[in-house]
Image (tube, rainbow, N blue to C red; front, top):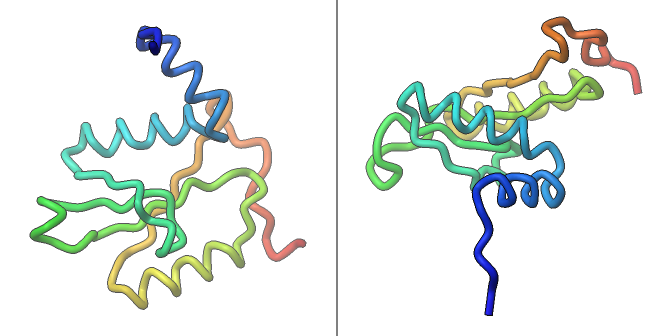
Length: 111
């Protein structure tokens, strides 16, 4: 039999199993609080989330959300933007700043 766990243990388990989980969860909560329907089935669009302004069966996603990191390259963002334009979505880039200030900008064309 499976032993039930509390929400804190569940969150810790998710953090240890899914890279970047705290940031992804924070972004998910942010968009849900703004009223968006958030779906994580966005891989085929090169994104982490899709945002819907209504029921997913009735409307198309308006935004494809990409969780950027400090090592995200501009070429990757441009490729993602082109992909989302091809499927009538706008690219929304989410980047978390550590201690309120980013210490490193995304690489501008550097490998």
